[in-house]
Image (cartoon, rainbow, N blue to C red; front, side, top):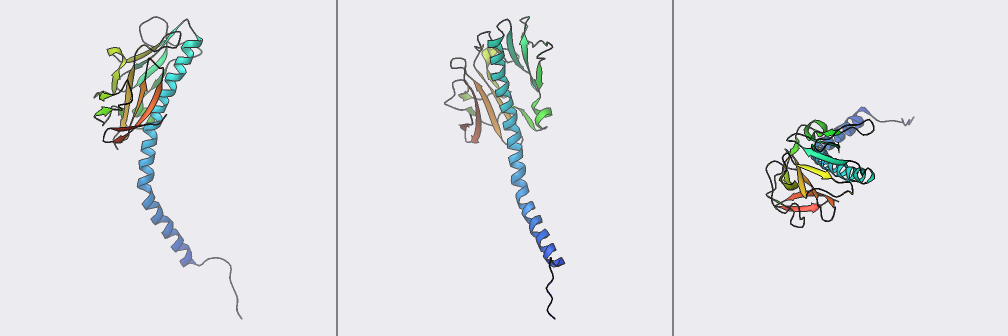
Length: 194
């Protein structure tokens, strides 16, 4: 009698599990690198979107100036009704706060590993700062102020990095109003993300 069974043997199951385990171990480092790069990019992208959002608020609400203030470990944003360059809060749009290390992982900070910014960026070309902020009219702390017509107070750059060497920057140009996101590719080569 020749009987055929449906299903798999224990040996076949163990072989499949072994192959999946080996493939996972090989793919894990690449996945972790991509995840760390994504976190830095997402942090820089959020700043870019906050800048664009505040500019549109400034245009819609001409009675207030809007501001983003950068501190060594975080930035805060909102409107500034009293001219002290510190965001005030109100019931419809309280000021926001973003801490790169707390919100995106403990290894993300302001700063860069690159010696120079992108040559094609007016705001960021030349040597890079140790603290992660360049331009902004030399204000201390660095800040961006949006007037009621949406214009920016000063050109500048904000650099983000992690301990794996992933570097991004957000460039803000007053003349054109452009807010660009850049990625450092190494050897002072920067590529525009958007």
